Image (cartoon, rainbow, N blue to C red; front, side, top):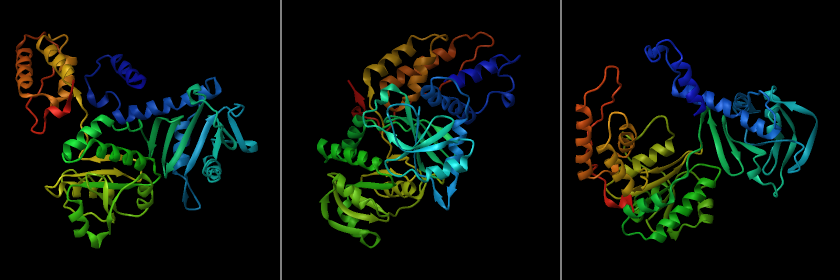
Length: 402
C-alpha cells in the first residue's frame, strides 16, 4: 500500500495528473516489484535494529536462479543476528560470506541439508546452524527464507508466510482455503456425503499441501466405474479409506489418486483423460490442466485438489466463500440511499459479490443504479457506470450465512 500511495502521490504532483495515460503511473506489476524490494528491508531492520540499505530481494533472486553442478538450490536461510542466543551454530565461518558474491552464497546453500540452515543477516553469511526450539517467533527477530525450487523462494516469520517470489515475480503467499467454505461446497457438490466425509477430505488437503512435491487428488461420484475404465492408465486397488499416511506413500508416484465422496480410494497413479476446455491455460502445468479437463469432461460430479510442483494449490471447481445475508442487505440499502458523493463503497462491494444477490435484490440495485445514472452531474465529475445485475443461475441459499 505504501508503494501504491507513493506512486499515486508522484502522479498527482504532475501539472496535469491523469491526462496522458501512456506517461502515467507504473503498471501493477512494476509497483508490486518495487513494494517487494522495499519490504525486503524489513528483515534486516528487525534483525540488526538499524537501517542498512541492502538489496536483499535481488540477491535472493540471483541465488535461487543459480545451479550448482547441475543441481537446483533447495534449502533455507535464517536471517537473524548471529549473536542472538536463539542461534545454534553447527559451523561458524572464520570470515563471513558476503551477499555480493551470489555464486559463493549458492555454494554455501548446497551445504544446507535438512534441519540445517544458513545463518545470515542482511549483508553476510556467518555459518550453518538452526534456531533453537525454544525460540519465540513472536519476537520477530528472526526470519526464514526457504528455497523451494529453482528460482522460487518464500520469506517467513515463524510459520507466517510474508512473501513468495517465483522467477523474480513477487506475490503474497496464497491464503489458506476457508474451512467453512470448503465443507459447505463439498456437501453441496456431493449431497450423499456427510460432514465427517468433508472433514476427512479437508485433513487430506492439509496433508497434501505439507508435502514437498506436487500431487493431485480427484473425488468422483463415479470413482468405482472410473477406476475400472482407467485401469490401463494406472493402478486399481481394493477400495480403501485414504489415510494421511497412505496419502504420503501413494502420492510419491506420478498420476492421480482417485477417491469416492466418502474418501475411499479406488485407484492410484491414474493418468486422466478429457478434452481441453476454456478453463485450461498454457500458463499452468500439465497437472492443473489435466484436472480441469477431467472434472469438466463428464456430467458426473467431480472435484480435484491440485498441488503443483511450484507449490500452487488449486481446487477445481473453485470454492466460493460464504457471505452474510445481513451484509448483502446493508449494502443494497446503502446503495438505495446513496448520493453521487458516497455511492462508491456499496456499489463496489456489490459489484464484487454479484453471485450472491437474489432476484429481489437485483431489482432494487438496478433501480438504484438507474436513479444515480439520471442525477445531474457537475462538469468534470468522474462517474463510472455500472453493468446491470442479474441472478446467477448457480446461486442458492446454501452460500449465505446468518
